[in-house]
Length: 365
Image (cartoon, rainbow, N blue to C red; front, side, top):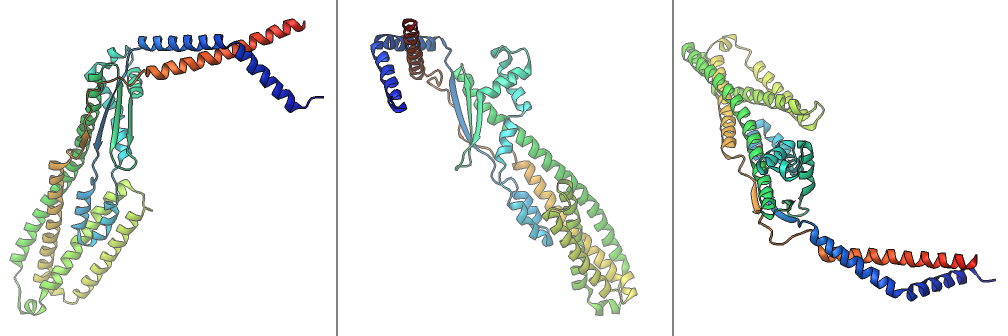
């Protein structure tokens, strides 16, 4: 009795013998299928790929960090803001948004180009023809656009960058404008209170006891504490609008606020011994210095917000604009021909083996 291994070897030799005896058929099928695939590739409309790359904003939070650093006791919180990196994935999502897609569809009349009756179909076709990916090591964002028209492919790739610049400029402007309006209002209110405090100080008068108390240093220290307390409260409200109460930033802001409140309580307790001073020059001077320090803080924040409005939106740096491609990317005729030849050879081999088995079965019966 033959072993299974011997039987498999015999089957393999028999298969190779059958294929070898039909080499002309296999060769003809291979050449015919390869030639047919090559001919079909000439009937396919060529596709051109345009490529562009750009550097997204790398220090989007620098002004926020500077604003925090200007708040004295809040300087310790600036570290969390400066650690924020450029959200590359967010920029890609913005370019893939329906708003940007619709603008590009309208500008290049892609509804007609794609022969799409529905805008959603045109968006899907556009998404299928566009690839966006971040660089793994260089921090760049790469855009590739496929189109039958090489000029349109390059124009669409460059237009994506322009639309991203337009959108980020609008978003940055809106955010900076909101901060500017907020601090402009705070600045106006503080200026009015500062004027009132100055008038009250001028009308308070002072006596020999006020001169001996040397209130300047204590009043200025108290005013700085009060101003920093107000700044921390503003910062805490901003954090709680975007973060949960259990986040590290909110907890640090609360701890800073509690520490300032404790120092203010000690300063008020130290100055509460003389009620006459509380109602006289010392109290008025302290209120004046508080409003003055607060006015300086809000003035710096207001200037930072205005600076953001003037500079944000131009941070996208184009490294390689998309050029009109001078050769097609698809179809690849050599690859198509080789694939067709391989498919023809495989199909012919199956046909030869099947035919031989049918012949052997008929002979056996």
